[in-house]
Image 1: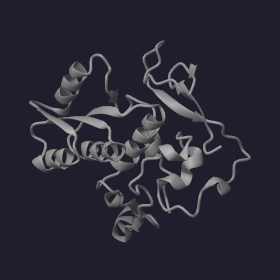
Image 2 (image 1 turned 30 degrees about the vertical axis):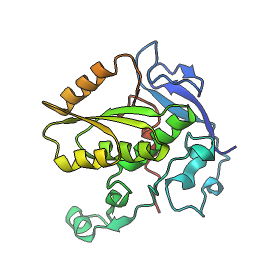
Image 3 (image 1 turned 90 degrees about the vertical axis):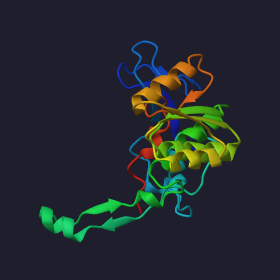
Length: 218
């Protein structure tokens, strides 16, 4: 076994779904599904792989079950920086900030997107879509490029052009939309009305959230 991943569950009505279920929402109450694990009090820190220096050192507590499906660019293992002045100003002993800018695509989005693409690969999915104002699009373009898949990225026209170029250089299909990120999302939903792309928007699928777990600490 390479993971304690057990099943998907609706966060609202708690209906359980098989872990091979590829739909993002509970059909009963239309709420997002979340990944659940076979966890018990007997699990120790020994499940952490201390010979890995990335997010996947916690693979037993993540939903990807076969190592060959892990899509990684070295995300995670970002440092905690001590903020001495901030701590003094707040009257606290210690304050830390986690420097997520050192992730391979420049933000914490690399962890969530890397996880989602890895699990999608395990489920046999390789075409994705997302509305974005920048960092999430860059991450999706990068991780999709690793598996030779398709990334369809919808950006507001006001998004800095560097993000568009970043995505296009990694062979993503970028569409710039007039208006806000909401308008980009609506345009994407219209183009994806038949569900031909896996919608990787936050909380539109269960696995991106798993890559954002707060335990990725040194």
